[in-house]
Length: 188
View 1 (cartoon, rainbow, N blue to C red):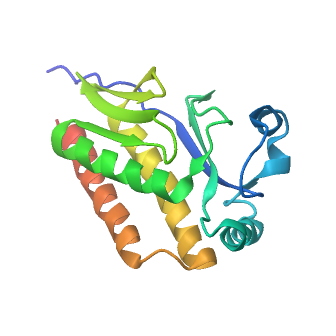
View 2 (cartoon, rainbow, N blue to C red; view 1 turned 90 degrees about the horizontal axis):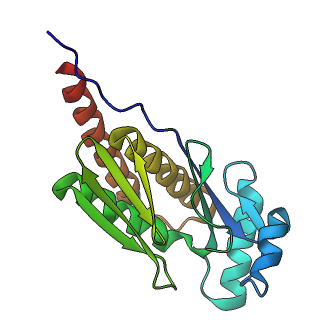
């Protein structure tokens, strides 16, 4: 009896950042000096929340930021691709759910025509972002995405107070689906 050969698990590191200001005038400055413009929610949650509330007071549209997606050591999201992070994460959850249901899902950035998609190709997941395609082992990739979404929604719930518990329940449900798929695959 031969053991099935599954693709090597994907290492996906995800981190969410909030813009210090309400907008970026010079994308090159953001790329050159990200620490001057971006606050990580994981390591500086209070400052990130302060920036979120500052955005809300200044423009009534809080939530501008950047999501770092690092796949096997390669940064996928250009720094100048800032977005409304809550809308991005909502779109990403919709795409993950659609991928689990149908084998394909897609989402958009809040203010650009560029988007992202998830699709199945044999034993691999294809993540397409801004016209670039990246191959990944599906279950570990999706787990990494959900870990990033969970971190964002827990931060927003605790520090910003804008996230209903239903978002966290949805993530838990999607994580349970992925865990069941992983268990079924490993049982083969």
